[in-house]
Image 1 (cartoon, helix red, strand yellow):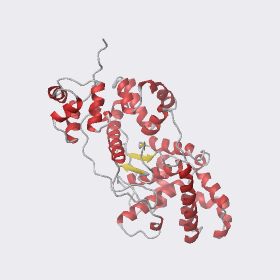
Image 2 (spheres, helix red, strand yellow):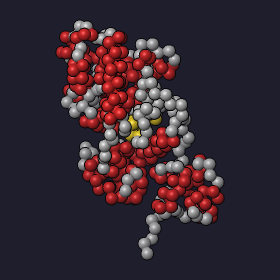
Image 3 (tube, rainbow, N blue to C red):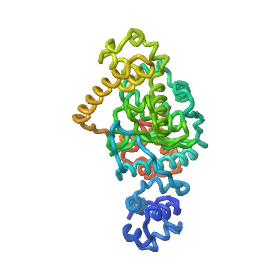
Image 4 (cartoon, one colour):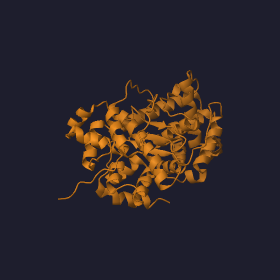
Length: 394
């Protein structure tokens, strides 16, 4: 008879997960279908649960089992103030799915910090900083230098997923974790960030368009550079007249994100921009082609043209309304595609996190079962994950 594999978890994490879930020992033991004495022995480190039993505890405590492998219980985090949502979306409370994704992001970041020390040593610090009094164009220039993104490379990237993968890779090379949330509607959340001097994290909504996710990543990077974890609910009317402190932060983050995406000096040097003297000169095809050149959405391009004085407020408002109408019609017809489990695991966790997990496995710090649990994928898919991620690690 095959012996069950024990889970090499920290006992204090088991006790923390139970108490933070608000469960008494007897209640938790009944739910886990074990004797209270057995659960108590696990929490005191006298014995260990099996992998199967740990999964059951994770379901009971509403925690991914990766959290049980942290070196110590995570410090409670503040609720995020707001979220980057679609313009006009109104959400009064967070859905259980969103709350789960927020907690998952915090847990994965804490785990990444531990794994990084196992594999690489001390994680790098994100030294780039800014304040709201800084010039957004200057901050954007410094962000591009920080990310090592060059204009001549950017304009060669394939618009859409090609550009998204390049921007994400640039962020992760700079020491920023990039996760993607699943099972959350874009109307509720487009993205959020978790600030930390080391391995800060950005979470984008996998249901958003690739171009929308790029802007989210750059917006949330600005929050991190401002030393804020945070979120936005941007409205186009706030561009020119921010009224509250929160709006000023969000407008600043959008200005920096747009300037990082489409730098002013390159935009104004484009031949097509130099030939346009009035709104009527701009055709829909002109706007589409120029947006594609940078891999940006048409709305981001229009905002940059507005800020640089190349179009009027009225033209901007009319075009944005047209584009959002087209986007809504397209979204109503769009059907979600299918991605293989190994690719979905990489897309959700991010190549950097995946490499940290695999590196810890290669050095015998964690087991193959741990890898599957950390990446939320079945063991049979690990070969495909290794091939795809480690094959492109350079």
